[in-house]
Image (cartoon, rainbow, N blue to C red):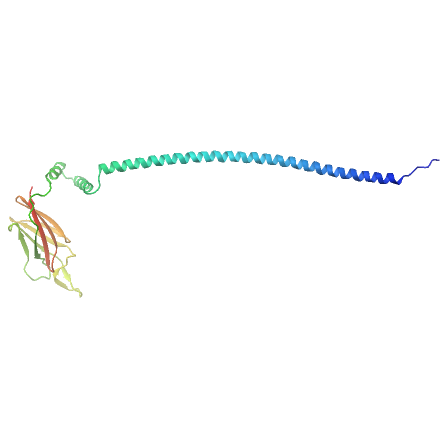
Length: 241
């Protein structure tokens, strides 16, 4: 019969060995897990970087395209502005501003209304600046009204070859009653009579302008408001034609 030899120190040594091996396994697992996580992290980071680079390239292409569009639009705008300036210059040269444009508009209106072009051309060619004009004179006459009980009033000029008379609407007082004098803010009806009985009626609100041809002279009249009841006539005469 043999006896087994039991050594307690071997038992404690085995336990320590198992404990160390357990710690080593744990550390190995931790290290492997960390390495795997780091590798996976790098993999995802690489994919993210590639995605960001792709997006950056797309944005760069869009930026370049926008810059090209902006450059093209600016060039087109500059071209359009240059063309607009050319059109404006051509328009101003063709149809200038001021009296010339008014005359062109008037001529077009006359032609549209059926005016004979040859007759209109003769009329334009016969027009010229006034020559040998007289000194300006001023006279006056009473404008007749419905409430005026006096005699009709008129004036004669050009050695009594032209007479002028007129009628107007009565002015009203504060009570709305008509007065004897005329209301200058209302229409006045003038009659120009030339020796021989030829008459010309001119209606409108003062001041009114009219011209009369008598012999080889043209008489130019301006009729405006004068003193109460009166119309003031300012006129001169020039050679005609």
